[in-house]
Image (cartoon, rainbow, N blue to C red):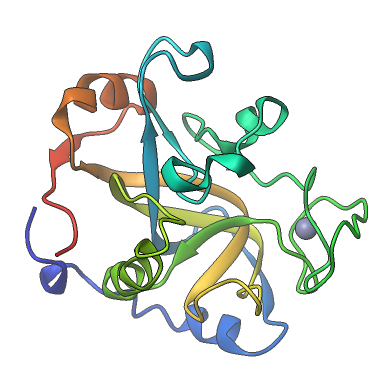
Amino acid sequence: MAPASSFPSSEDVRWDRFHEPGGRALIPADRPLLGWRWWAVSVPGDYGRDGARLVSPFVHDGNQHRWTEERDELHVWQPGTNTSRSDWCQEAGTRDAHVEHTAPQPWCTCGIRSMRYLEGLLAYYRSRRKRREVTLDAVARLASWGQVCGPCEDRDHADTVRAEFAEITGPVYLRDLRWANDIAAEYGTEVLPWDGPE
Ligand SMILES: [Zn+2]
């Protein structure tokens, strides 16, 4: 994989509106917002799965206490379009204040997260990895659309959006190529080797 600095940055000005407090916009499916997302890899056998899968980076490895059987399916990235779910969403800044809703809202914590710049994503990862809260095994460009909201102030990097719908676009850059065939077959994407962040 080429150095992060050689990747195209997300100069789409529609990103700007999400940096405002409470930022929210409807993004059309035929002109999605392009950002970056990262994942952990769940290896074959985890929760009975027959192959490696991309999973949420925040509930793996050193943070397994958040990964329960009943939440497992929410953490696994699906082939094709992924849809935000609010099953475990909270009103931002509260505990257990669940309110029924569908698409992510400016006041809540759900939505499919991606970040504007790969450089920012890697910097955010580096700032969190010392506490072993996150795992970074793969990155890919992510197309987001539907109702899209800005970051949840008390937990996200400022360049984050939370989307109603999202889909991988382009190759998956993977650190451990033992899982390349599984990932390519499951998601129908090209898989390229990646050394990971310094
Ligand atoms: Zn929500």
